[in-house]
Image (cartoon, rainbow, N blue to C red):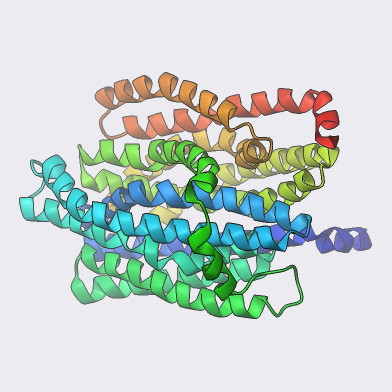
Length: 452
């Protein structure tokens, strides 16, 4: 029995998953500690302002980061499996060029748009100076797209070539640096501006560390990684539109998901109280601790499935998809149940007294939507690698049409909790995707198509 367990742990997929699992736990734990310290340092209102600054910046940042990164990981993983080193270099160059070009554009757009937008939207609820400062802080955060380029490229390279240990080390190091710098910024400035400055500074430190780790990884004897000079030499000739076609299609879907999960609830809650923005954000982080069991599998499954797709191994692809989805989903359901049992004592112990009731209520509501989502940890890799992004878009659009009116109605009925119920409903829509993929994988004709 022990020999069988040791043999299982030595499998690359299992070992990589456990590595990413540990990294995910450290990241979630750091986020929990950060939210607890900020709750005392800034109060619910100040913490809500900081969360909204990050949320507004995400409207720009996620447009690039989410879709482009996943598309690039899938392409590099597939190219690595086939030994196409030039293609690996080209896709890394595409990522770098995309970040530099779009990051520069976002800085320019954010300078004019974000302060004016916040002043217009929140000018009646906040003092004018405070509303404008919120937009300025969001613009400061827009700089991290450009600053983050070396870290993003390194992370993608490690992820796609299945160097999961350095990938996890980079993530964990960045999160610990971010925790220290955001708290230090608040202590120095006694303002949400300090946390924002700490966020940006942490990206500078992470990018420097990423450059050093990338150089070391090139000498580790693993699969090919091009030199930075090769990547930069190819970047000017890379046609952005060709690569962005996949990235933006995926980005549109992922940004829609991010908007409904993170942005829309905060926007709706901020119209009632910035304190409820903070409560909702903390509940998400606490439930994130419960769903750490999903992160190792979800981050590892894309390059693993990409290898199967690159080798046209349909049966291996199908088996790995079901194994990851069912085991991951079951683990998430158990973890969420256990998480709810300890959530309230954690809130009472580590947060101010006025946080206990609203944060725990948000946790309970979110749990209803997060359990179905656990079985969808391999949805994005499936749609990317089977070229079914159009089907994904169609199902997502139907989900938006069904859930948005309900979300708005619930918000009118319950201004403080309606947006949270709306998010739980939207998360549950992943079951529809799960059913569609199950029916597609049952079709044996796809195995024949892949051979050719």
